[in-house]
Length: 301
Length: 301
Image 1 (tube, chains in turn red, purple):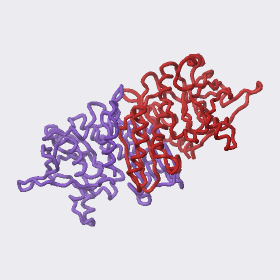
Image 2 (tube, chains in turn green, purple):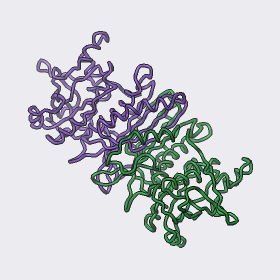
Image 3 (tube, chains in turn orange, brown):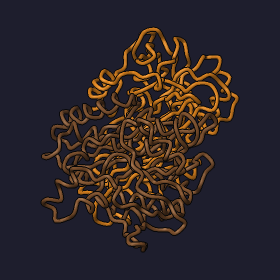
Image 4 (spheres, helix red, strand yellow):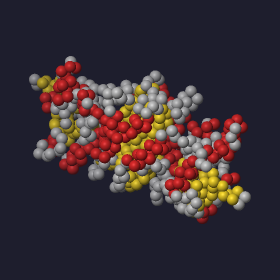
């Protein structure tokens, strides 16, 4: 229901001057008399996003922070503080809260985020962790999904596919990469890959009103995608194309800026996989012909 | 578990310069290069904080906003934007989300709060609504619990007790009162009454390191407290003293400031009920003797 309900909400919410960017980007941009705050919130719930028996609560706590850190990175922002809400099953509530918080605090320490507040309840339900993360953009403006121009280079960080083999629990939020890019070039649009490379790329392109011509062979396929393909009946490319929870960044910038980055050490590989076009949609060129590709990924129910 | 776990958390969380006031006040005060943000988060859960059959979802949505608005008021701040996280039971998720949001949007419109973002999940659990509210203090500093001085006047807004008769679902967040007070006087400390007049007053006093000598007869008892006393076996005063969810403000200020307010129309009654003392605790004077009173209220498990 999420997508259709969000559409309803966007219609129902009056726009007020204090929110420069509201529902529909990786995070909100909130104007105040004294500056801009970047704010996002994302929750994970036992039975929906993780399974307690299989996943350590420490990892789950880390992930609850990391998925929000990834959204902050996708805005080109720096995380500053977090508010954490825990809904705890009644039995073993204190132990569970302690274990989850060890992971939350590990991520907070790693990214120098202050836990500014929160709420804790016990109830008849599964463990749910909701994190609101606040950040700021030190210089320039926040990166939106809507800023890509025709003829921009489209690049992705790291390698994608097969994160469910375990990587999805310890995603490396690309805060440091975002920092470096903000210093070096002018990013025109950005999004993080939470629901699948092609699906999130399609969202960025749709918001920007452009399409992309992909050089399919350049898409960096993670070794986890290859490993999964051995038993999944799907090709490594299919995993890379549509698996969710990579938490890598998709960014666009002028081709000149992209070329400039070739000589830089960014700490993580950034690979150009295509070029934006005025023709909307995802395209690949093969034997001189353009073929349209369907975005695929995890669609929230 | 909440109080003891929060104590553990306060110990475990490194203090970072960006958080001027963290866990342990009505809201956090977050410093940034460009100013201060006031941030709080509070959730309500079916079966813990409300009962779906008895309470309309519209009211529940309103309340989820109002309890956070009350925290913002207790900081002397103005609310600006909200992030809303819904955890929805799988059956009728869309209808429930719609009903809850009508109440959320009513409160948002009333207080000119922008819904900046949020998250929605469906799961095997009860309806849970978590709101993070961001605000700012237009002039001066945020009101903390810790600022009361010896010999300050202690005042409360409205009348207290018996809110469970229905008032607790539609609390009037005292944003407008906080605005007026900020213009007129210097509030030294503030808290909102969520767990009971005496319990929350005790928290403010403990943080300030002072006590209070109360003029018990001046405590404004709500007519709901009188009505409840007819069947509860408790006196109206007992209801006023310990019932939770009044969402009125307790504020302290110099006696000169309190006297100044007598001539002002504040839109809601503000009643002085005592005066702070260097001797800690809650005291009443009767027949020339001081008698210590025990704080009572709703203690979160």
